[in-house]
Length: 356
Image (cartoon, rainbow, N blue to C red; front, side, top):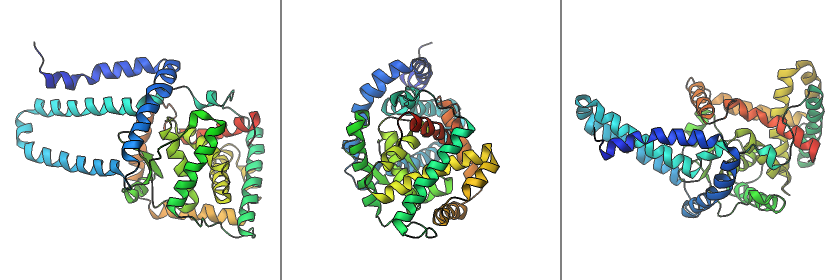
């Protein structure tokens, strides 16, 4: 039986999946030929193409696409009911094209070598004693920066920077970071506030990378105290790291090494949240003891973050988190959404090896 071009295109997703899974079994090759080979070229081209546009082209594209799909289904609904194979064919073509572009433009980064190898970190495991010690170190640094900025241990830190200023400092942070780590060179910035900031908030996300346009999107409703690390996190995806723990780690390194004191505080504040959460999970008594040593001003900033997310809690958020968790696991991130917290092991072992 001779296949039509449309049917062949729809079925092409099968060999694509086989190739991606096969190639993904060789992270050394993915690292050499994709992540350090063709991806930087594609990524820079996309940033040059869309980065200069002041609004999110990717968000606009999703909007137009969504309207086009609804219109197409509406106009062809009767035809699809009579010919369900036609609907399957059109759906297959769409998925095949999207799958190909996604993995070519960014998705193969899910299969690259772990970031700890890039930084010469031997392991990501740690003992409870190491966690406790590192937590105390981060508390000291966070308290120090909080007092430096407010001159009052009981006062919350306010970020006196506009979104544009935060973006500019973040980009400069990557420029400085690349002097010591050339693999993280970031040129032709494409860092923007998402047009879908409100939906992202209800979904529980601080930002995302659009893999089709290469734009780093930051949730514009995110509290200012989180804006620096979220911005650096999303650029971490742009430079080729898909793992959430890796981009959290990169985000911390970049923001903590900037000359801006508010950025330093934001980096320690964010990292401390992960570390405290991990300590509470493993040993609540130790957590209670160290929590008492956190400045009241720092606690007020955590309360600010908590109240913000509580304000937007809704029944659909767990569903979106479940979908994203399944997506990560399907793309070789076995820990799924828990990979966000895996940054703790990276931080502890990097600090042991090289120090902050």
